Image (cartoon, rainbow, N blue to C red):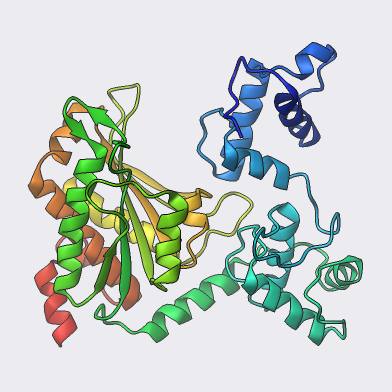
Length: 380
């Protein structure tokens, strides 16, 4: 589909306006011509929707925003739901189903609004336990059974968190053997943020190689999502992590902003206001943020839930890290400094170690634990 923006018009814009109106974000246009126009009001409504849903808030309607808008039109029971491998159902009705199954103790996996195989298995178990035909189709009879048991949709955060923590515990405290996909943003002709001769793609490639070296040194199985001069799609990057049965994916980025005053580091994990975010991803984001701020004295821009594809489509815990602004002179000087990139690589590794030790290495050690300390801990 074409990317829609302010000033565009046509049937596809009318479709977007209709969906925004159905969600209560846009008033219906009295003029038929205005109904097909992408106006300032449409842009504001899109921004509000993107912020609500944890999408990139740019006021543009690209594929991810359009699919989220389309999915927001459904409620549980408005259509039959089942697993289709080639085209998984996607929408608010799937999210509601996942939340209710999760709240009842069934494990649909991450509550991401995508009807995958784990949602199918959880649905079948619920149907079997409820005396229904375990056909894996969420139709009227299954919806009635869910509503009888769950009057208010369950957020389902705590069961998911406990399951993920138990998975971490069972995987062991050692880093040796853990499989990590390191994803340097952009690459090849896609340079990402640029200032002069400095590009995001080159900086993040260098950082990724430093992080890879640290991880290999402690016995981890580190995989790079791209080479020095290519830029695979987000779908290929997430497929690599899923096919490799990775434990973690770490996507490395820096930013650019119209204001030269914007600076600092931020960590993004899967989730939004409607999706439970108390997961291993949120825990790791907090640990990474804590380590990076302590080590680099960079402004703390916090941790944030997002539904970006790199976070949503990874079956493993995934983070998107923004490690400074090339548009800010102070941040740019740091990013161009190899010592800073070493500090960042070490901080990320220490945060990953803390995740698997599960609070045994607590706050007093923040910013001071080193790769050598990890090596001693791994060999103890």
